[in-house]
Image (cartoon, rainbow, N blue to C red; front, side):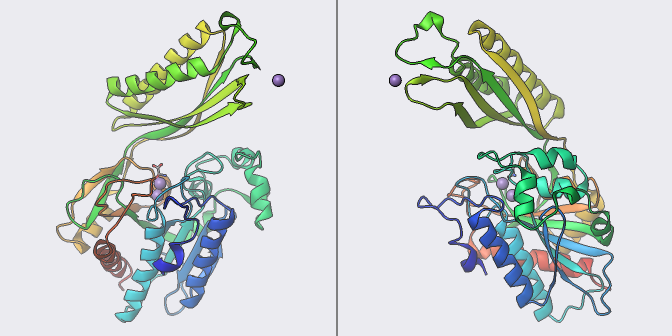
Length: 393
Ligand code: HGY
Ligand code: MN
Ligand code: MN
Ligand code: MN
């Protein structure tokens, strides 16, 4: 299975770019449907573009399902494992359960959630947010990609009804819990598999700096209202604010208008990612950055606006389900994660849990992201044990 996905959306540098409903991600969706049909799983696509493949118990009961899986989309130039490892491991765990003669007392589902990275439409975990009712469908419909295409248009182009976007109470009512296996993002695991305790608070903000476009060769410095200067100061201010508050702040995406070598920009947009172990510290970091951005923008006659794109407070995975996983995985370490996940969004509606598979490089969202084959197999064995336990009669 893994071999079939590896070349999909892989760039020359070994990074993966699989953006929702574009070529490589559509190929990943086709792969998912193919793997589901090979296993005679019942496929379901919700109104939001999330995919589900169900192994129904004898008698065909649909309630009390145990859901596993992850996502197939990526950040630009991302790693091979972030997302796909969870989906491949889910199918492999079903194979192992069947090979071992397991007969589930309740359905087991494999999920592939849409737009988890938010790399095309800007909001992370968009598919699971819509499913869980954690984002207003009207706002989701209006989200635009870099080419200005709305999520509504893209959804319609992929056979969905944009007016049907939103919570799927029927599907949620059929799911008793969700267990997501994911490659570790960082390097804390000293053993192949660990269990998540929590997801730290994290969010995304958009900073728009508006100045005055003009000719690079005929506009004297005192006459400029160049938005690039407050942007540059703000990038440094973000790092200093994060240092002050013991948080993390990243500006990794910019948009410059018009983007000409010989044109002073009229506007620049920066996207800020801020995270940290304590909610107040993340908020204080962003407040400092906004304060500094406004001050420097004023000095340059530039307007600045900050807008919150998404924010997820701390997610503490429910102890009961976590203890159940630890009982099935004696000695597995527990650890928090600084990365957001669909399991963190769905936690507002159903009990969720996460398994992490060791990443020897500790790198993620970049080509160096890795999981050794032996550790990935240990992850499948762990997920198999958990699913067997959760669906035993
Ligand atoms: O950005 C994140 O934390 C996750 O990888 N989507
Ligand atoms: Mn990711
Ligand atoms: Mn992920
Ligand atoms: Mn000219």
